[in-house]
Image (cartoon, rainbow, N blue to C red):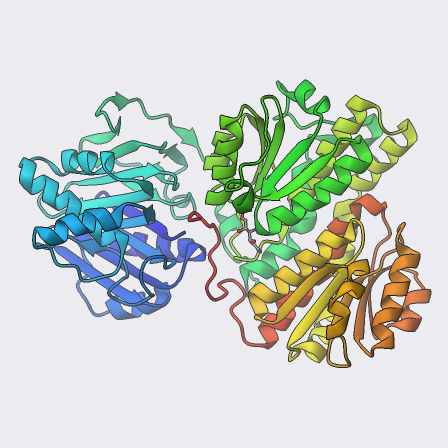
Length: 613
Ligand code: F6R
């Protein structure tokens, strides 16, 4: 969590830093702060969003060509001005920003307290900055050496950037478990550094991804990367494949809405070059060396969190039905702590949009340590999870900035569908006709998503009716059960209305007690193998006067007769319905949240990538 950004060069740092913080705000928005070097350190911090910091700094000295900035998602200490980063050493010589958690901060703090250090904040980060300064004083050494020595004693995860008044022409950065990207400017000695590439893209396309346990020294003497043993390595410079427009709102009021509308393209991008239906061709290039492993797997374990976990559930239905391989879907946070049975050669698939989710990363490390082969399904290129896996496939959804995941879900499901089809082809578990039909249907999904997006106005009308509801129930069966979970998650996270997703048939084992005339029940009731069964579930809700909003297949005449509101989506193969059915549910959550005055791109208490456990 938290976004960090830094600049060193000849330009004024502040405008670059503040714009970078706006771009990183999706990572956390409890407080923000900057430190600027111009002969001396100026540090400004403010509770709230980056715009509040900007307002606060407007009349202050914001000059300097070296600077760092931070936008916070609080872990240690409540969101307030004091706990905001940057944190400074007691003598105000060093300023530091941090994304991650220092796990052994309490022990270090105790030692520092004994030596007379005083702490302003409740953060683990302040402990680190005092610790570095303490080492620097004791050893009478450079900031670089003090940082290196400090990091050898630190337990936990961090991406940090440090600047010092006494060594003003350099910026030091280090990472372990939290991402950092360095942009190489056009002028000698000019560098940008950030938690992800979005603050960098408009300045340079040449970047270096810092690895775990590396320290970067940036400044007049160039870019140097060293490990914690002080051994220098040659930076590997890559070219960013990201367009500036992809990280701007492009005329939409919110990133979330833009990303919902991008889905016909992002799904097509996920399939580009990988699926040609007329040639019966489906192939994920990134899954190559270990393909025989996957094809012959006795079982597959999927690990993920949140929306990515819902995509994993869809994959369970797909892979089991189409390729006949048993699949288990695990919350990464549970898997990592429960001593799971994973043996050498087992196959684990990790799904993550950001590629930085701490629990998913830890689940991967655990499975790896037991000899499993790990596949990654990620969006962010070069992310920690993408790099920690043996093989994998990117979903190519483009940057997802709205905190609620939308286009990443559909792109994940698209890639997982291709994976299931690829496995089915190798294992010969489908007839040629079934296989070919599914490929053609999948190829046509982007057009059908486009059609689903035309439902926007009618979904808005339904949102107006239910915007003040206190609870929602979402029901689905089979492939539509994960869609029900995802619809409920979207609504609760951005509108703060309590919502539950349930397998429709499970309703009678408990949740049916909640149903009365006040309860909106969204039922995904498309024409599929559970059609007759879901009709019975709808009747059960109606018998208790629940208000039913049904997502049906276009042309359905039966269900509209028995429900209160109908949303019609195009016809497709049952296995592909999640890609269409989720779209009106994303729109419903969006409109309800907007009508309730919520900030859908930055919902309270949330952040886009959860890099803490
Ligand atoms: C919900 C949402 C989260 C993420 C979850 C995993 O809209 O965005 O539930 O899906 O935090 O994140 P990734 O996919 O980045 O691992």
